View (cartoon, rainbow, N blue to C red):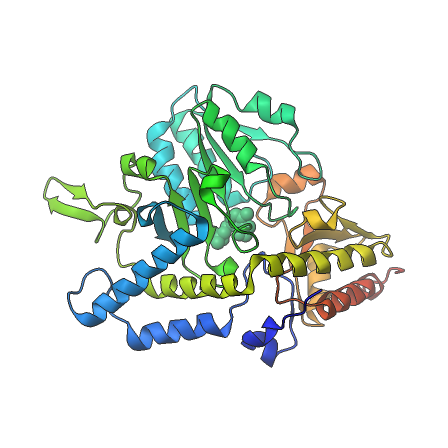
Length: 405
Ligand code: PMP
């Protein structure tokens, strides 16, 4: 059991008594990331990719070095396969608008799952509507497991695209992406992976996973808001039309049209978020120093404590696997007779931050039989004190609302 104290690296934990249990929504940022932003604006700030003077070149270097760091981080072959976007949602929309609209037709099928975050569902609904392709959903059991039969009947010769979350933001389960990708590739389909909830918590290797496209957000792995990543296989990206058009994504322009820039710039119209990319690279460096083994060890240990204590709370219902080690630090639950919004508001009085609502996954909520749930999500900067305090205060929630404990 290691208690490396990374908490001191975070001003929010040094200066406040917040018990932050909402990392699945957005992570806290360490000093290293916040300072990187200051450093960029003080020492490298000019319009990147344009200027021919030293300061602009410093901005360009910061941006392109960040791309190289992301490439290494997720095991891509080339920087050309890494595009910066605003977030996971934009990355997935890029694939939907650019790849989806130009490659799907009536009779084709897009396979997704009912477990998806709306960000990995609504873009495919749009593609289906506009192209006449059919959307087919894999349905898991209540713990988030897809049967072999479900996978084998629904992924077939009609499948052109499979769009799946690596880790569910509600159940915390890891989906069998590689197995699904192998089957999809057997039929010549492409695989889009939503890595928003996996990338901050486990070593991702896009090639091992079999992802043709892989999306994630900087803000969930301690980077800044407003920067996300799309990985795509080079040969697919090369054949795709731009998603957005504007400055910096062209090689030449005439009054009749344009020749697009080389990858990855073809997909990065307008002035890019160089500071955000620079801060994201700092977050990756910080996370690598913490180490995924440590992240896992803390998340598992603390999730186990929540599960053990929950055994004494007959009115608390945790969704997903019965095994705390299959939750990736995500504990979604309800308390009998108390609305999740009330749970969150009551805990807030003790400075405990949790999420309540449908978690942008309404179809999954319906499937697990809840219109709304509460969710506590952990990271390596949480400690035993956090989860014991959370469970202690949770015990008081029903009493607060006038019910017996
Ligand atoms: N997919 C999953 C699984 C998520 O958890 C989230 C964020 N809650 C998203 C996609 C969307 O991420 P963003 O809001 O950063 O675009």
